Amino acid sequence: MQITTNESGTRTIEITEGHLDTIAKYQLFRNLIDSNGIIDENVLEKLRMNIRSMLENSAGNDKDLLALCFDVIYHQNMKAMGLHNLIVLYNKHITEHAQDNAATD
Image (cartoon, rainbow, N blue to C red):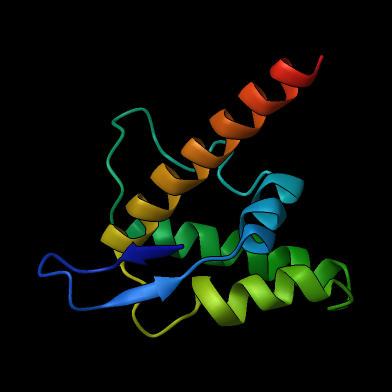
């Protein structure tokens, strides 16, 4: 899966199922966006600071979280639009898994 990170669509980041699972595992988007619903560079910086704090507290032992950082969050193309598209992809991923789980029950 890919997300677009700029308006012209020329910059993308590859997102794996593992990345989305790591976001879910740590609930990285929980309480991230203010009540205004705007995703800007400040929100991206807040996410980066939250993850940095998690890594410092875990002594960097979580390889999945580190991979998410290197591959996605700190990727050179990651900007506010990329974060917005990542959140949209994540929500779609969560919805699909909820539907799959409901169908198997």
